[in-house]
Length: 311
Image (cartoon, rainbow, N blue to C red):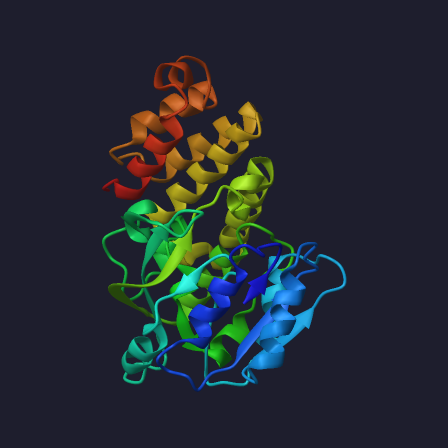
């Protein structure tokens, strides 16, 4: 569990792990120098339950470093992740362990319930909230190159695999995306449609707080994919990567670079159903008449068209 300034939700997250129907576990909590009452809450649980082991950073080092510090301490055969503002349903581990025993080289993940800041269910599952693709099991390498749709709080995998892959500590917002793509390169996924974890939307989620940094890391991440996976990237995924880089440059108001990458997306696969859209974006840099006409919603439309386009 990575912990940072979630004193309002932390006890619920911890209890959701300690109250699992499968109880033979250790809960490793790494607090990233919280300035609220989180450290005291964690200390109380560590004192009262021998399964809890805590580490406290003296300075804020970021979520990737926090997760890696936790991974290095993991002794169990399998590992799962949970944020200090989220939670698990009581039978998560038991149900996933029953599945993974027959396919230990795979990663098991599930759908999740979306709740609000007060813990009230929104009636939406996370796969609906994130518009994830139809195919969620098997070899997901190409799909994950395009967008990270795996619910990180729901994943169960061999500790060995996670430790070998680790999180990129230079990234703050998209390290989980790189992490799952790296795993998808070597391992298949098994999706459980039943929601086994909860994702809390409360307005302070880290990915919602810094849009400019998110755009910059979006560019860094996809350049990493281009550099490390090269010829293994399919046409659809490659066009999507170029489009996403262009989209990020447009968000950073760098219109020339946005146009450059939109054109690269068009050249990779000119017969795609959204090629005209790519051309319009290239000509406008994601701005001008097209941006005005669609009132800012064009980016979401582009994303959906890119995800569901055909060759």
